[in-house]
Length: 98
Image 1: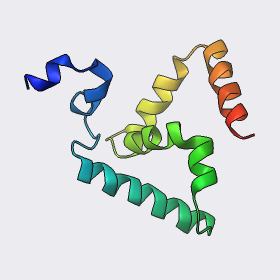
Image 2 (image 1 turned 135 degrees about the horizontal axis):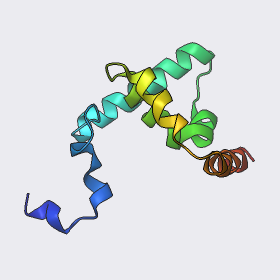
Image 3 (image 1 turned 90 degrees about the horizontal axis):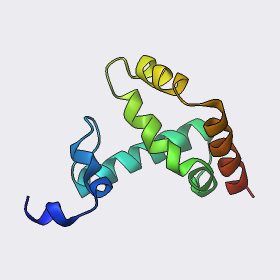
Image 4 (image 1 turned 60 degrees about the horizontal axis):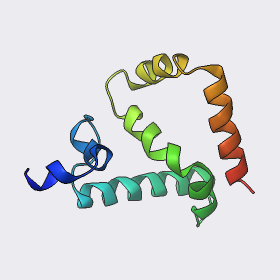
């Protein structure tokens, strides 16, 4: 753990949040599962456009889905987001589409 003390706090977030993959192998399996699910739902062979558009939100949403009462917790958390901040993020996401 001495090695981790010099790192920025957000680099080791996986140890603070239950349900996040702890190792590189677990992360790769999680990403593959998300990718496979998207391809099955959409019928597309390639998920690059989806990843570029929603990438920063996809894994976060998946994490909530696997928590007990995850949907309710996510909805409660989203209700706390100020409207102007939500508009900022929505605009940033919209700009990623182009």
